[in-house]
Image (cartoon, rainbow, N blue to C red; front, side):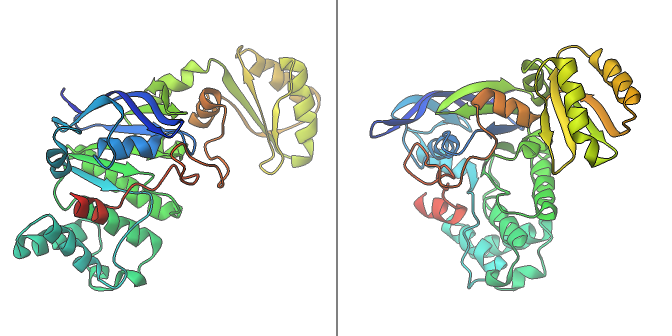
Length: 340
């Protein structure tokens, strides 16, 4: 299988700060690569370099068979890009926004209109497409923004945190669209802080922290690398949570994690036999459990183990390139097309 994206040793420096400190990553053709990392880790800077919006200070990258430094125009013709926030002309209709993108890409008017109508139908937006974007919900705006990145039928699609701020229903709609694009042969690089999103969509995952790749592999492989399994107990009576915590602490020789709001006690365990011992102790103490499970670590556990940070840092965190905690907003399809 050929690679849609191959980057080696990417470096990008802002003053005395290295936003990228030697990033290597590969996206096989037709696959989805999930890129995870805390705010400011370098995810958006990586997308900007690969989409030719920034030039690397060192290293090399080839996208859709074209070098991002020596052949930027050819790269732009082969890619689509959706940034962290939908950027559309509020006064235009969804249809008019897509036609505008087509015309910026030098499509004949008739072809641009036909492609806009085709995409609106594909995204379930034919009727709303006749209304001004300012009347759209957040989910509808994101779907039109994603459609805009597909006007040129890209070989490679960059999605920079595409479901930020969406409700669960809208997020699921975007996930469904991304899956279909991958099935049709589009190669996707997806940056996200939502661990569930990476678990649902990505064929492989690359974790970036402080401008470096700290881990890569399939989701289950990364989970296994953390070693321990997690024992989870949800007592039938929330008042029993402290008692469950004390019992589990005695069994594991350490302090378990208690989520008072969820009424759950969890602890990493290396010996699955502890499950049987726990069941006996709960029975002896007359404690019933609504949920008792032994599972592999979640991607959230992996993320914390690899980066030392939860999936989302404080909103006022600063990124390596001096932007806010979102690691910088990748440019929208409209702006990117204009630059091209």
